[in-house]
Image (cartoon, one colour):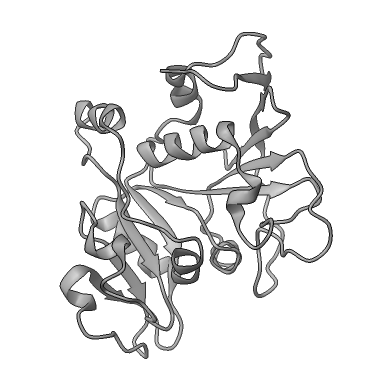
Length: 248
């Protein structure tokens, strides 16, 4: 099923023919080693939101790749603030994508991993209460869990007064969650960059100018520049660009 706005490859090996879902899946793929992939959408002038939400920047082609990346991952990593602000629900896939995962010996749905320094989380939130796979919360020793959170999620503590992301990611890998997809937000992206944990960035560039005001896709403490070579450039017929950068 490939209906909708066509997506074509601009680089490498440009093709005038639209990419079907199988070709897109092969382009993004699953790595042979553990990988942390980050996925963001931004405006031409670098805004991470429009009218306060990322959904204003995302069109049909971006949502198509967004769903594909969720199908490919073992775990979906998101900051608690993004979970609340963007209105996340339980991470579920349609039957076609669940079947693709079953055929490859994967769990039908990826595990939700929430990164929270404050544990300001509602156990009744749909992302926890309706989750098809028990979620994981990464936090630190000084955070106090609200009543009922451990009933709906595994709470893992790494770090004394802030989350030790490197240790948390290593534990996810130890649990067999090798292919990680992070959907933000900007402070988590910045912290992962500072810890040199990012292997890949998938960036959708929406063809609009948001103007001053919105923040960038990354925030937080400064960090040394990191090189991420370009791997492919896709373009949708509505003017959206989809870039994939990854370590060698």
